[in-house]
Image (cartoon, rainbow, N blue to C red; front, side):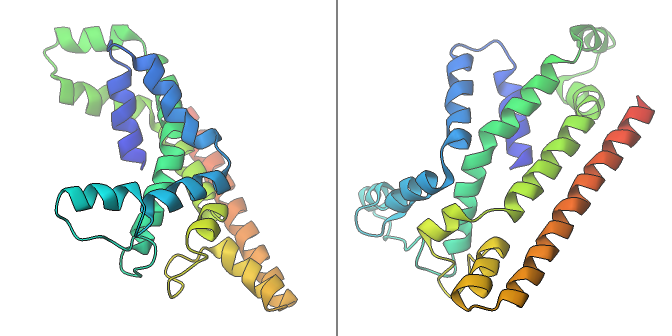
Length: 210
């Protein structure tokens, strides 16, 4: 997800027609209500009426049980999560890219650096703080994934797509194991606190370097 966001941001940072429209379209999945995202993809993945299986039938490919086959359900849900946060991460990278002085690129080109060298020696190092922020936010978002999974699969099949938050809900409310559910909540809180502290340490170390 992060690498893909970076690549898309690099492309949209160039002078290409319609890039502003693409940016807006890219952010739309992030601002949608997670449950709505789940409903949209639930329809697209539908084994009988979904658009993906319709395209497969036109290509002569057998229909796939994207959300009912435990071997591919997790991958199908992962695609939805990536789709949801890709645009937001892309915008963060674009903001970081626009903060890099063009003079650095010009100097590198004068010294004979190619595109790959410019990206690896200038762009990526200068975006280290942005990358660390995106990594932390992505991990936090992944820990908190709930609505999309509940709408699309309910955690199935065979719990193959169950998330930590969903498991906590089942333990605490459906099974009435309040103590166990509370313990899971504490674990989730600790994970989030550690991620935030990690982010602060990374920012502090990067600040000292620069």
